[in-house]
Length: 522
Image 1 (cartoon, rainbow, N blue to C red):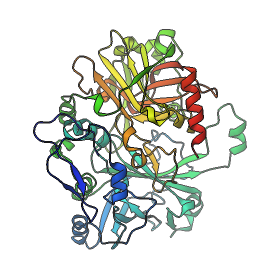
Image 2 (cartoon, helix red, strand yellow):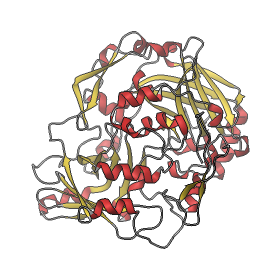
Image 3 (cartoon, rainbow, N blue to C red):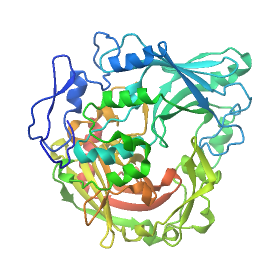
Image 4 (cartoon, helix red, strand yellow):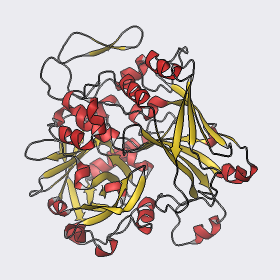
């Protein structure tokens, strides 16, 4: 079921009893790879099940007790920015913070359902403004946004660090009746009618800090934008608020979803202490994937060696540059320039606001020696399109490894976003995703090929906290429609700019296998 690390003492095996609950059996050796999450889904533990129905049952006792103590519901106090706050990355709806009361959601409520399918914790989430306008997210499974720890032993520390201090989201679509409005003030009606999506996020700043946002579609200038030199989309940020989830509820959900969690949870509130503990862990890569087989490839470009011009590569980066989050942008014209002087970025701090007055400095000179890319295939029984990419260099003290990635999945979007950690997945997911063979979702990944993205110390093999080095993500995509050249980007703190790029041409046989496998998806 889990990725295991070397630990002192006997290892434990988790089994399912007749009621579908996880229990411990006698100590026994374990296989040293990803396995069993699919078994959990089928057996009915607290992971989401999309395709099976089951008899409804009362909520878990620990959760029911928390809500019973508050009369069956929990209140929320929310904070929202005013119209002078410039640093919400998406474009703003004309009604965003337009009125001191309308669609400024500062009160919320969580109501627990009395019965629910096994493996879920269903609630109704509602948010209201001072005028009584309310939107509700019905039948939300809170476990969908609770971190899932897929490792055991020492590896749980770096995984928990990357899970808890990453921002990840669940999307709710209005056209699927996942968002419902009750409008008390008719002045809010036109703006509310534009809203088509709500996004519930587990914020990256602190455990229990969450946020809720409404996205609208505005086609008033569609023709003008389409004819322009740069077309992004018609999305607008309509409302955005932050709140704290009840801590006792959060920890109960965390333990419910991860019954074999073995870390010291007192470290959750101390990022530096948790980071130090995580960086003591030696990562045994053989426990994460099958033995890799090196595959021929040709390195076409390392961006800092070619002095490639430094440009924003997506809409989020463009917006963050325009709103001033890249504070010393004018100093850097090429990727090579990033190696010669500290990069100054606005901090993401406090209640979830970008603070240009609290700059963070990052030294990216360590990227100079990261000048090699190694391609290897893993899981040969899966058509040979699963790969491990290693970013390395003779003089580099670090390696960055992205593994168990199916190249056929890259057909879905130009740049695929990977967070660091274990069983990495898209950080913005549908609450009720379509059942697809190519969906990239934490709860749907095959057991033996859960992807990982890790920064390692080459001398010790220990995990390195990439955030302290100024790296937040890895983006991967095809260079062109030919789909034979991979572009690999390392992305900075808060995804403000790309800091490293490599272009790698794959061998013809791997390209052909990927094309065949892609045609099998549907």
